[in-house]
Amino acid sequence: MPEDIPEARPLLAVRGLAFRRDETPIFGPLDFKVDAGEALLVQGDNGAGKTTLLRVLAGLLGADHGAVDIHGHSAQADSRARHIAYLGHLAGLKADLGARHNLEYLCGLHGQRPGQTIDAALQIVGLAGFGDVPTRQLSAGQKKRLALARLWVSPAPLWLLDEPYANLDLDGITLVNRMVEAHLGTGGAALITTHGAYAAPPVRTRMLELGSPA
Amino acid sequence: MMRRAAGALVTRDLRLLWTRRGDAFQPALFALLMVMLFALALGGDAKALAPVASAVLWLAVLLAGLLSLDSMFRGDAEDGSLEQWMLAPVPLWWLVLVRTLVHWASTALPVILAVPMLGELLHLPRAQLPVLMVSLMLGTPILSLLGAVVAALTIGMRRAGVLVALLALPLYVPVLVFGAGAVAASAQGLDAVGALLLLGAGLVLALVLAPLAAAAALRIAHN
Image (cartoon, each protein chain N blue to C red):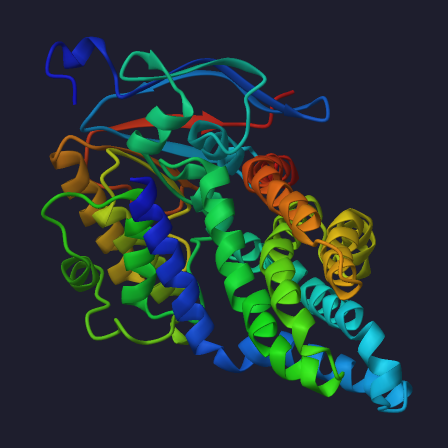
């Protein structure tokens, strides 16, 4: 966290970002920024490029044009790794391992937020008591909750959530909103893709509408 | 940070191995069957078996390793773990190196440990055993590292199957030549140190270059 002038340096700033696959434009050019304590809802139909946008921001795909700045500095692999936690359609959970062992592994890989424990995170997402159940025996919604627990212990301030509401019951949707709210309250930020049919988290929100580029 | 990530990955792989501990013996069983088939085909005659024993054992270890090559990164690619590796604050090549070494320790090492017993089946001259073991300990990690590159290159395919073998086997030739060659040289009373040193040099080179190449291949395949 830069203590100097936080307003002047948004957590994430994107200028003229565009991505094309085999000469077909997928999205962009896009300009937006996300400050600490803010959520950006990325809306759009299926195939509008929401997932691709998140993957470009995470650094899994290279953009064709434009710049991504994190705290005012051009995003590099190591600054991305320190600031971004990405939750995609595949959560990187090992089906044969229990919830706790999966979290221990992902924490070892990505680091752990000081003061957070794995048991507390499992409690928060409603998986207390499922710590030793192999992940293959969890339901799709419970796997999603486990993936959210991983974000909760991650030290990264910027969450990229790809369809976090998918597969979740009403309780789960409230849970996502509560977690996003708490995360933003501690100076974090989040990008959330949705089809627009779900309740948005009760926080300071910007909107980004992705349409299919003509 | 790199040590913590490596520790987490090793712990995870060992736990996964424990949940599927039956699978861990498969390469060793394959090598055992292959050696038995050779012994049967050659009639179980000590005079016929002893001269080819070391070459057969090298081939058995090599082919057993080939079987498990496709599983090196496939599981991690399919469940999204690979994405998390790319997003982790440690270099991808480091995780690839750790994964490859754990894979070697869980697939090749059990076979190597079984080699003294398999050698008895083939009437391997006792004097050749130390050189054979050293050449295997130096050579098989090279095979795993080269195999990691091939496994990474084919990760984009749904089922790579035979293609992995077709790509890997030509790369294995020098390792087999020097590995089996070292044992053959010592059997003729020549000094095997030269071939073993070359294997050692190859291992160092593979340790440095193969993880970088495999990491680059994984990134390309994953786009």
